[in-house]
Length: 424
Image (cartoon, rainbow, N blue to C red; front, side):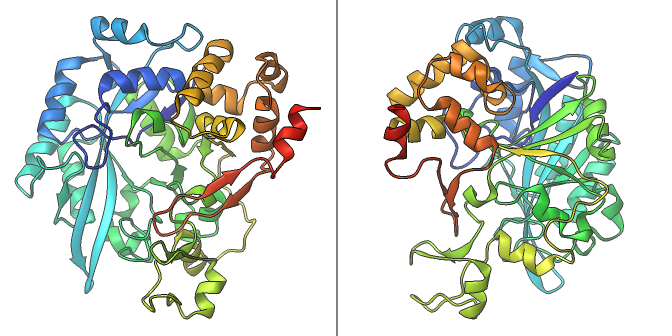
C-alpha cells in the first residue's frame, strides 16, 4: 500500500516544543495531514516512555497505535473526509557532542527500534552514559560512531539515520561542527549508514552533487516541535504497513518501495544562506567569499549555511541525477498559503477556520497540496486556492532565503496581483 510517513518528531518533554505535543494530538494531526506512520520521538525520555507504554498498543507488525478508547475520543476532532489509520514507530533523536580528530563535534542522530523492550534496553544503556531525563532529545558526550555501535549491540533490527545532515551547528556535515564525509564520522561502521535526513534547508538535488552520499537513501521529515508542523516534509512508501518493510525500503532505496519525498523549498529553511541574523546580513555563498567569510557589520565570522557547505563538499555539477535517486515535490504548508491569500498570520483564527473548511471539503492536507486535481480544488469555491497550489506545484514562487536561524519567506503573488486575480 502507498502511504506517507514522518519519522522525526518530538514530545512535550523536548526543549522549545509545544505543550500540546502529545500522542493524542499527533494522532489527530497525522489524519489532518494525511500521514499514516508517525515517529513517536523522544522514547529515551523516561516520562515520555511511560506515556508510550500507557497509551499505545503493539500492532504485531513492529508498529503501534493509540489504545482504542483514546483513539475514539481523538477521532471526534477529525472530519470524516480525513479519518484514517495512524501507526506510530519508535524513533528518537540523540544529540552527540564530543571531540574527535582535534575538533568539537555536534551531531544529531535518529534511532529507530522495533519494540518497547529494545527501546528500554537502549535507554538503560544511555542513562549510564549521560542525563536522559532533562530533555526529550538528550545531549550525550558520546561519539556518534559509539552510539551506532550501542544500537547494533542492542538490537539487530535497529536503524540509524544522521539527522538534518547540513545544519551548521548540529549535524554530520555541518559547517560549524560536522565532518567532511560520512566515513570520517563513522569509520569502519559506515556500512551501517543506509540513509541520511536532508533537513529543511536542502533538497535531494543539492545532495546529489556530493558523491559521498551516492549510496544513501535521502529521507525527509518535519522535525516537528508542534503538531501543526507535522508533515512539512515527509516520505512516501509503497510497502506493507510494518516496521521491517519500512526499514527495508529505506535501507535498499528500492524505487518500487521508497517512492520519494515531499520537500520544503530549501530556500525557506532557516540555514539556506550565510549570514548574521542580529546584523541582518544575508549572503549568497559568492558574497560570503567576497567578504572572506566575515560579517561587514560586526566583523565576526558569518554563519555558513547549507548552500555554502554543499558547494564546499560537492564534487559533481548542479543538475546531475545519480542512479540511486528518487522523485520529490515541493510543498508549502497550507496555513502559509492561506496566510498569504487572506493577508493575516498563519496561526490566526481566520486562517485556521479556512484550513479546516478546506479539509472538510477536500480531504487531507498533503493530498490537497500534492495530488488532488486542480478541478477538484476549484470546486471548493475558495478564491485563489487553485491558483496558489498550481503555482506551488510549478515552482512559480518567490523566496527570500532563510539564514542564521531565520526562516525564509515565500511569496506566491506579486504586489497587487492578488486583487486583480480575484476580480477576473
